[in-house]
Length: 180
Length: 180
Image 1 (tube, chains in turn yellow, purple):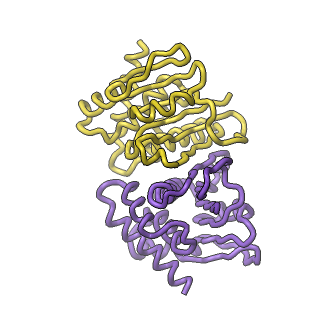
Image 2 (cartoon, rainbow over the protein chains, first blue to last red):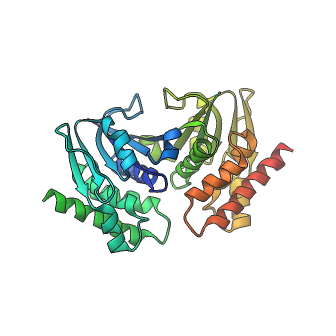
């Protein structure tokens, strides 16, 4: 079993932290081999950044993500750029407040109003990355919610734990509603 | 030109953040191709974690670090485990408060009392990762101090900017003193 996750969006949306937290959850709390990476090129300055997590039961020889099983898209530019990296039958979770992708039988698209819900319930967008991470975990079950919560607690600044737990709850509820 | 940097230490010392900041400095403020990654395996649970940054003038085909040019070691376990990954003639910067490595003509070792100095001047160890990052940049010049400072400002939580600038200063002074 090998599973490749890509977070995409624009700079400042916290996609690196989201991927680092998923890597921590997977490696430390699910005992999986995990490689987390981001490549920065000219595209990082153009509103399309990505951060990847490759999770496997076996040691990972080639660490770069190549056939994405599940992707989060928080910006239109990132969605347009990276949708082609999703493998056939893959899952793409888009922030429907800002991102539109054509319907396509090649992938399963899940549209969640993440920005508006985060802003509405938390008063700011700063935890959008955690909301999207929680939605991804709810939909893909790539790690357990328990592992995810521990990894979030390991990774966020002291004093922001409650705030980030609320973000996890919002992401989970949005995803569960969409799956229902 | 290809340059590989490895931060190593134990969990909770912030080595992933240090490497992410270096990656940001290099990619966004020096316009270099950059890949930042960490592989977590069983060793991550044993006090020896690593986070790598590969910097190049050309697109990076194979993203994993293989011959480390410069390494930071913040724990003895990490130093013992990863010293063999340093390439011949490479630089290893150790926290001399906690880490001891044999003298060896194969590498250049720089011993800095980073923990004690950080604790002494900042009252806590939380910014040890930033101190070590600043020391590494001062010694290797892999990015400019200006690029590093911008990347730190991009990456640390709001309200901690001054604190982290002070950490940059401590790391730079420690390194300059050792080079003098």
